[in-house]
Length: 224
Image (cartoon, rainbow, N blue to C red; front, side, top):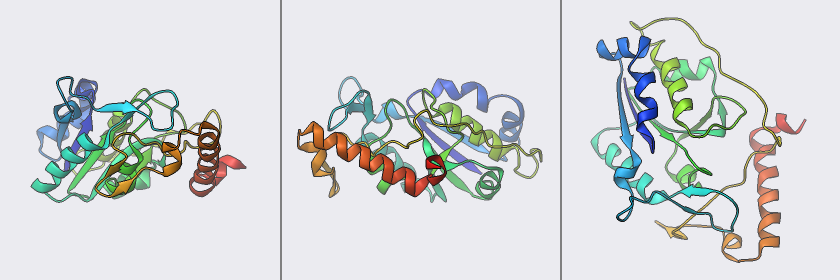
């Protein structure tokens, strides 16, 4: 099995993939794990990979262009069974999910940071979104490490122990609305017009409606 991890902080994964069961599985070539620094695909002298969110609001958003470039490069070299984005509002990670993923040949795990990724990444590039629990981490690396450990330990020849998904509750019991950043159009994929309008009253209303709609659709249990 091959796992490619995309991150802005590759050093955070040094310890989890170089010790214990994961290390032994790598030594046996049961699992090949490669960590890629997204900044290698950043723009300009400062290797920019984030920008301000359209429509305002606190926090930075990871740009679509460097993520698109690295995923396209990896896909040009081999086929991938799944491109995973780790995010608090993804599908709850369970043992059954790990069992299924462990049967694949190649997967990509994208680690988020800041306010998240441009929503077009989630709409157009990612094939699966996973959350390890209802809480927010500083970045996706720890979540990626949990997923990797859970997958690798059940690969035949590594170890057969099972592990449970972590759960908790969101502070506001609502999922976040979609976020976008520059460019306003990429590959024909456009940012919603309302976010470019400059009308913050309408933007706030749109964000509230999107947050409620996504929560009702993806995690209705949070509204009970």
